[in-house]
Length: 106
Image (tube, rainbow, N blue to C red; front, side):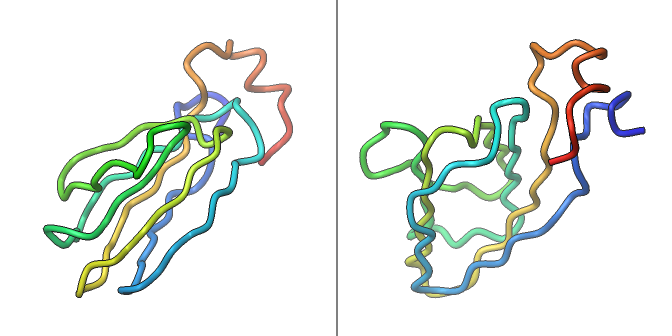
């Protein structure tokens, strides 16, 4: 069962093409943390804003970004090439094993 692991949901990949903007939105719960690993990231033009960071932060190839997606966030992809991110959701570290077992699937 996923409740006994650090993983909350299946892994996924996100490809964004040039000129993409994911408007401000929030995730469904603060019971998880979202991990982004940049697999193919152009040198410039890819950024993510989590919470109140104005303008966002660059997305970097080979680096992991971990954030609570229950906070408002948005993504820009203004580079000339596509961006590929590996995404994994993990349980929030403050949840107990019992809480993980009793929470509904997201």
